[in-house]
Image (cartoon, rainbow, N blue to C red; front, side, top):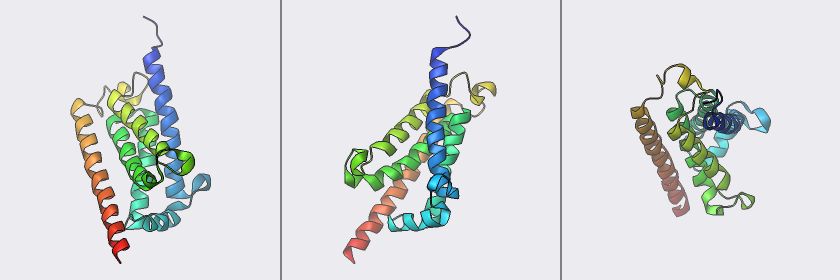
Length: 173
């Protein structure tokens, strides 16, 4: 057996690439980096998209993306990282779904791909080249996978359902 394991190297590459993209998107929302609007402007935009209260929604989305992405890059608390990022992307998918699938038409392809990729890493684990491995998987126990993904799914469903109801109420007015 060689010192370098292709599976673990592949997981490292997938974690770092996906995590870096999520960090960039999250920091746009939180700090206005990379051409983003920052918390205030993103909060206003979230309010217009039906996520209320807007500022708290922007904070939650930004933390889910940037925080989940950072933990994925590090390979730390990987189930929670993958679940948090996937949950944040579920909200983005809800926004883009009316435009169809493909991103060039404003569809949900891109956030769905990021969400599925983050979820896959959260389910598969970070691999050998990760802080989870270095800490003896202290933050990556089998029960944590179920808890993280159930919690994220429940939270995402609640947020998306609340947004859908708010949009229905706005259309009735």
